[in-house]
Length: 339
Image (cartoon, rainbow, N blue to C red):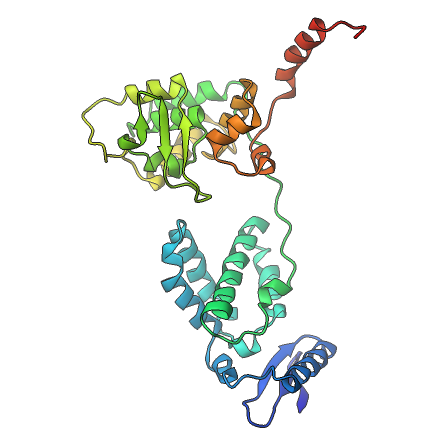
């Protein structure tokens, strides 16, 4: 049978069935508590109660998150960032809740609280990670979670994709700032990013054995989407590689510097240059847009950038309308007005 009781400013629904442990959940509205209790009783009549229900009573969300962090996350390419996100979540009060009392309302409250301090994109990634942890627990660990509570809430609306490109005069300022940088690789890395459209991590993982000088290509074995790709190198990219002096083993990194080092040096570089709101990843936007301005087709640019979905590719493509005026004029002049 089900009982509904007031606990502070919330309502607790508790369902007890002969032969099994009680199950409970709290809600902000009494009507929601009654609706949930009625559904649980119906599920019980249909055989939905499990003798493993006690597992939900004995397990907290923190227990589940720690197991996911320690056993699943290490296999992910972004394991360091995901571990940091989960460690931060473990300090939140929501993590201390038992799985038996966990519901969408808790994550809705977490979402609203975090939106006061973080951007929607950050919250979407956090909730996605927690949702995946709960899904792994449901499907692979035998934890009898009836429904994933994170799936039951509305995710924040993501910010509009960035469309930042180098503006007139900014590249000259960046070049001037190279002269004051003590890091010997920053200039080569930045120029290589613009010539290839590669992500920072892809550039810094590149090895000399990945380069085919005869064909003028670079193989990228580890990518964000998990699909290796081989890209053609522009004359500018090949010249950058030729300018890196010294003897190198095939397994040596082309740019032996850490991601964190490049990140910090880049931040100092743009600050000295007096350029606002220019991120390293914006160089990828710049490169892809330049490829299109060179006249490359969508499949050709996709081969270089690694995008599988043209819609995602266009998010990184921001052509300048002013640059197309001359091209349109040339096309118009070549046509017969009467045709």
